[in-house]
Image (tube, rainbow, N blue to C red; front, side):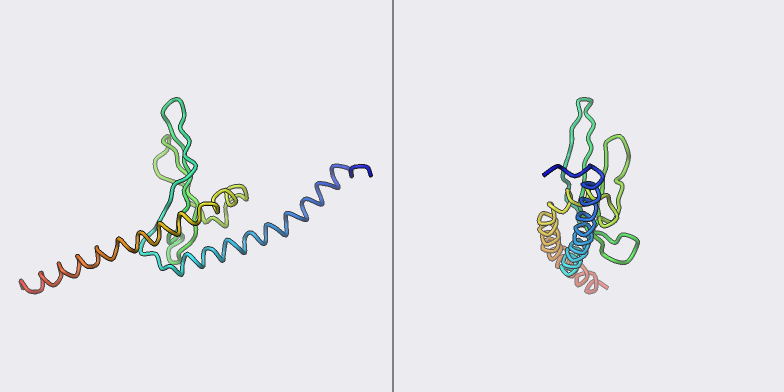
Length: 139
């Protein structure tokens, strides 16, 4: 059987990918909802895909959950380089498909970091309570 022309193969791939992209986006939204249910205490990020260059510079990618746009915990992608100050942040669902696929592999690391952050915060809240009680007793 002869191979179909390239345009036919391209159209078939487009149809197959379209459905899969929709499924991927739904799964990202579900993962974001799960991470939100963990009730992060602060923005939490993990760094991956660090690249070192001969001139000493670096680039990196980050996956995190933060209050992107102000009020709602959102699964986000960040990228940075030693050439620029700060990190560029976007909602993961808005990123190019290749970025989304690469980032989601790091969700278990982010989940663990959210939980570690909460565990650490327990001691900070305990210290704040002790401080406030001492403060109130002095006055």
